[in-house]
Length: 410
Image (cartoon, rainbow, N blue to C red; front, side):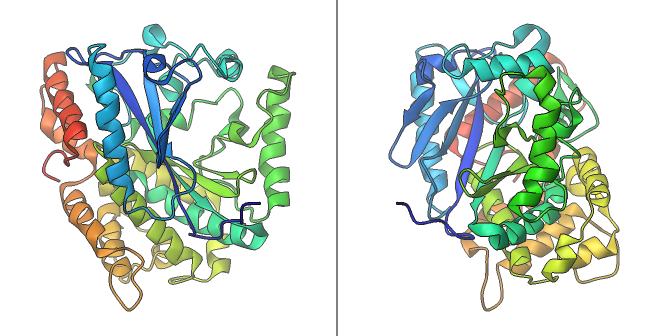
């Protein structure tokens, strides 16, 4: 019998990549050419799997990983291998959270092989021909817990940090060839993709519940009750039907964080993951605020803060003194999400017991100075949003994925 994993004993990371034409960068729905019809491939440290649509392949840790440090190298090796496989099809992988000119109404192709009954059910209820289903690539972070006490502490810490994650990781400023004015369009679409049954996503920020029984009664049972009229077979009556920004997976003893846009390369993703994990750990350990204060945070103000970060990313203004106190921001003045993250990097990587290893700063410091990847993409595109210019910028992004380099001055 496998020993249960406790808080911060291990980490699960999932990265979703688009498959695009090597020349045009249009999406190529050929994930089954890489994965086969069963949709899975295992390596020593990682595994590959399919997603809802045929143009996406997911790379993930092959079970819980004891440390984050080696993961950029493992994922970079996977990307090189997959790109080699795709080359014979005239295709390659592309990072970032949304394809910049994909039209889901005409280009969506669902995975047609194993597990297809679930995808067809989701499509029949919510219509997968939308950006919120077929064009949203993200990084998921899975953090373990054992028992109600650990779950409650972990859930409280994660809830507190969720609203400011788009200000760290937004990478989706373009939709169907145009800049929308939002930096995190993936989350904008994600938060409304289940509007036919609102309980599925809620307000993205999970409700303040801190035991398994409460979670089942206040969140999961409500979702399953609301989906039942559309799903008499019970296809969706599972924990994964919950689409909040962090979901409890009691079946595997973990909470999965789902609000982080995918970056340009694994080095950036894993540096962000390390910072997020360190921040959550500091909150769980009550470094800046007692557990009761964290647990009392209500959905509404956290949701308002999330919306500001979806729109403005790292330049979102934070003026809620209670919230800034929870994250240990020391002054009474207003600040921006960028300044808060810069403060957290410094606080978490210094002192007698740093929670953030110093080597991650080689990526995080320039990333925070240059701004979110969404901001850097818009800076690179400039005022010229013709298709040719977008293709030039995103071709460079695909090259950065292959080389493992940060994009746009970071």
